Amino acid sequence: MELLSDPRLQEWLERGVREWNEGRFWHAHEEWEQGWRATAGEEKAALQGLILLAAALHKAFGMNHLTGGFANLRKADLRLARVPRVVAGIDLARLREEVHRRLVAGRLEPAPRIERSPASRDA
Image 1 (spheres, rainbow, N blue to C red):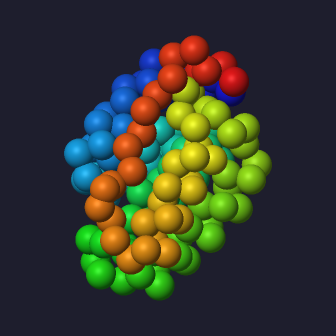
Image 2: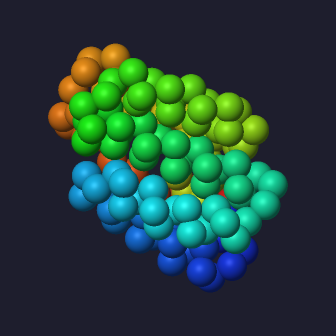
Image 3: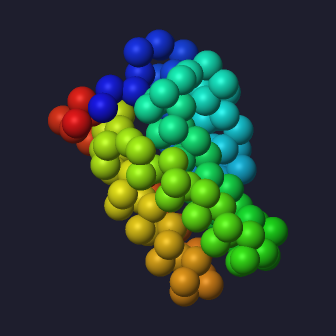
C-alpha cells in the first residue's frame, strides 16, 4: 500500500523512522501523529499502528511499565489487522512481531529497527 499520497506524509514518516531507529520511540510517535491527523482510512490505521508500536516500547522501556506496553501492543494489533502487511516499504507485521518479542523478553536490546524496502512500497 502506498501511504504517501501527500509529500508531508513522506516527511513525517521519514522523520519518525529516523527517531525510531535512534531509539527515541516517543519522538517517532510524535512525528507519525502529525501525519495521522492529516489522513483517513487505511493510511490512518497504518499510522496509528506505528504510533501504538512506538508507544508500547516507550511505555515498557522508557517508563518501566511493561503492562502498559502490552496494552498498547494490543491496541496496535487492532489497527494493523486492517492494513496490508507492508505499508510504504515498512513490513508492519515483522515490526509488530519484533516489538512483541521485546515485551515478552522484558528487554529492549537489541532494539528493533525499521528497514524500509523501496521495492515493496506499493505492496
